[in-house]
Length: 593
Image (tube, rainbow, N blue to C red; front, side, top):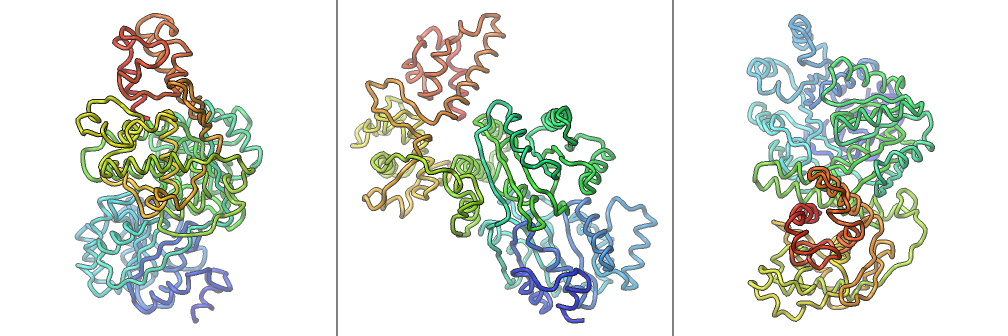
């Protein structure tokens, strides 16, 4: 059979999807391949089909047992001889598979990366006619990716041990930096590089600020997806069980899934979900990698993921059948604090700073007013047109916008005048004429831009800074230093007008640093966090919360976001005594924002 006949006979398709045939041909020509194609684009077929047209065995390296098992079952259902070697088999089963391999009765062998470091297994492979290796979920190779695995890094041994055997690497997500890292570490030789468009035209992406615990918003969303399959991601094991129980009380068939559950229970939940016996799985990120279920109609994140790679891969599990699917991200400032705490626990290394930068990108995406699909594509170094009707930002009614060009030029000029050596908070301190010792010691109180930004609160300047990041006028370098791009220089020169949605920033002229109004959601969320801290302090000291700070003080704190003792003393209701008693704890919270 030729490739089209094979495609029809084994897979039931009359034609290839975009880019598939190009990769199939490269593999048949025994080239190394690196393919980056979104979830649902049909990566598996790109290596499953050519091995049927070649002599020998294809060895597929995959990170998860459940994924390997599903692939093997699906291939066997299509009449293709496939097997997996893993800890799931006993000695007798493993020996039987080895005998089948020696007799040439298996075309695709699935293994975990750990097995390739086993001397006995490597010796077995040297005795077999391997036509090519496949590295699935290849982003795990790169330490700059979002799911780096040490055992994947060791796969460089394949080119050392099997120098003439081609390797095909596949992943759904990779920036150009990660792509280069994959190619380098696997030792790929002049690989055929194929990168698909990041635009999933059947996927609608929504992101909203979470109100309280988000459950009311979740129920409103689920009304549009009655009796449909979906995944709801939460941050902790405890919250998966709490949300699953909540849905059960509402008559919705839902089960929790997290790493702490017994293996039998996890396997049963997974199997029931794939078999449509369970409508919704509420899970941590331990669930879903490589899940082979095509009719997932929605994915909800109850909290913000730590990276855009995680987010894109997780929402990519919806609509793999090409039919309409929808995603919802609910997030709050508390999520950012939690994710930063996780990163802070990492040992000091360039990777730690990289993790902070990835989180910053995720935060900017969540807050962005630009096309969601376009923002994701740009992050992965792809350029697409705005989606028009497949994200909340593109379908939102026209909003009144505020011209912030003058403010943007002030901020960019201050970054330039401070020689592009500082973070955004410091730059804003200079703009607002801060008397902080660091500002004075650097002599930045003598700059022409010092104190010219008193028109806006610090929180407003942070919002303006976020907008400039979204537009690509600035970029974040090492140690969170802000630097101008070529576009930023053009903005300073007056070549562009910068606008911001009114609801993100309502500008009022400052009257001797009086009250300012800004993005309501941020105001409300910050107030809630401050109130929670006040309750903790009051409980610990056995006093009423209002004795710590009044609601009026908390609201003023949430608007001004002071970053030092002096700035905090400018807030209504805070004097020296109150600051000495409670100020440091509140400052710690505010600085974490």
